[in-house]
Image 1 (spheres, rainbow, N blue to C red):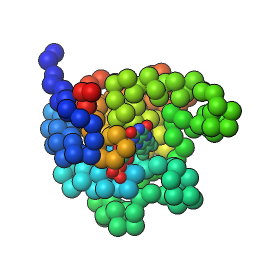
Image 2: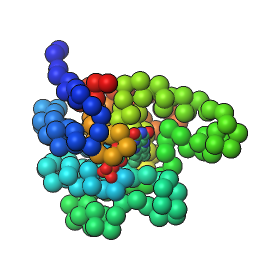
Image 3: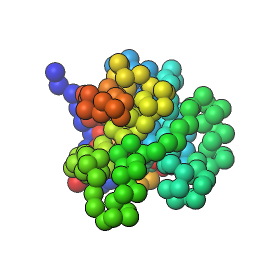
Image 4: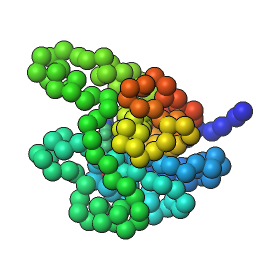
Length: 187
Ligand SMILES: Cc1cc2nc3c(=O)[nH]c(=O)nc-3n(C[C@H](O)[C@H](O)[C@H](O)COP(=O)(O)O)c2cc1C
């Protein structure tokens, strides 16, 4: 089987629209019904929802306390647009840091789950993010673990990576399977 991967010369937000176009095509080819996107503010989630029909979309934002104290980073404007478009918004503990982040922040060590995260970053920040948000959405009961989905992530802001994967719950993390890389930055 031959499939194409789109490589970006640089990571970053400028790749967002192209990734969404590629996701739209691959979604149709594979008949995928669930899409999970990492979008802290909701901006990339809105862009995705504007382009994609006939799919259940989950917009995963950072956990409260990541940047804005007890508030979530999804802006009221993007929240309304997402809700109007039927997109589910999810926030929870980050699957690939979790309480481990609290331990390593306090004691200056590293936890196994953070090593998993750093290993996935060998591909790109976005590949790590795609895996992480899929676990989070599955644990939130928002996506299935017995069929393929598409996940989108990026490097800090915007989107530069998309993969086709079968999600898993955190308790059986190693059952997760990355089936296809649709796009990622090459550096
Ligand atoms: C749960 C979660 C974890 C994330 N982890 C990382 C990360 O490890 N590295 C990174 O570069 N970006 C990370 N991001 C940022 C996303 O990949 C993406 O670039 C960003 O959420 C897009 O938000 P925007 O639509 O507001 O620009 C994370 C986002 C979320 C929601």
